[in-house]
Image 1 (cartoon, rainbow, N blue to C red):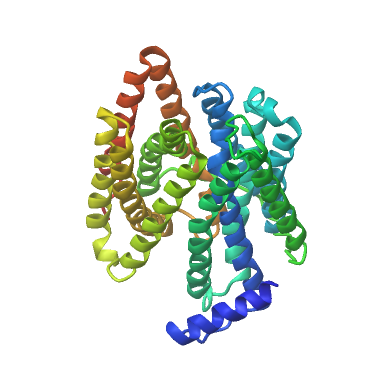
Image 2: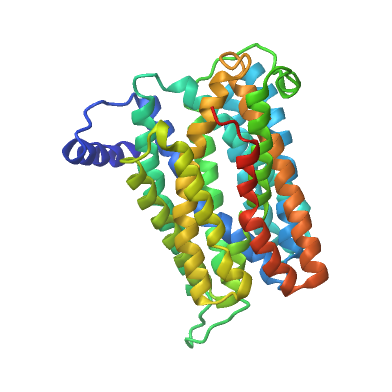
Length: 418
């Protein structure tokens, strides 16, 4: 099935993009596995938060779920690093699929009672995310070559972009379609659509676990020096980048999930949430491909500056009122700004990483270590947001959206310029 899918993709890329370089069977499999993970996350990730929010119609359960998730991602990177160095990089990758599958297995078992267990679900989700992304980075280095890596990333990005655009609309449509009874009347309390989406997500994760066993990974048999890299002296450029990561985490902690909840709270319709997510992803993809014509090393700082302002300005309308117009205004500016920001910030990050101490032999450790300030920033911002909302209710919500919408601008104070 995957070979048939790839044959059509290759024909398209050869005809319209002039691509002639083939990938090995192992690289092909890895590319579509990466893409289907992202499809699965786009399909279900947004709606897990909405499912937890719906029962009590407040933010507490969702906040506790995400706080737990943020707190567990970093330990997952640390544990995954040790397992990868001892048993091979494939193990962390497989554990990422397994724990992500457990999130939906538990949700389907608990059903309506899932919202009473945000710590359990957050722990499983955080472990899945941490293990998966460490394994993804490591396997990309292991299973692709220097000659094919750029092509591999381009191909994977193409698949992921297409699937991520379609996934949320598909999920939202399924959820809404199962709310209607035979009489044509909507049953707002029906969760059957959610269970079907979660069952699809579970089946895909289990399929990815099974497929991963066709890979062969050799044990590295080296120590994972997480604390050594974290406490390196004379590593000023990297330390300043870590401070910038903390500041970026302050924004990410709130905006990782909140906008989708606000869209649902405003519309009370999962199909609208799916369409909104699809619209944002489409704008992000168009922005990413447009940037491919402009993005150069010498343009990084200019791009970082303008994209940061777009991300901040997107939140101004939400500060005054949350309605159809301000939500669409946020979608346009934020989708363009975030995609632009991610492209140029990744370029800055890898440039700084290349200059860090022992970077050539400690790349896995550096990938794990940079999660520490991100996690700290996410946890702090979400905690402050929840305290603000608990005390000031809607005024605290609007103020939090504005403050954390601009907080990432502080990274320009600490980020190294060379």
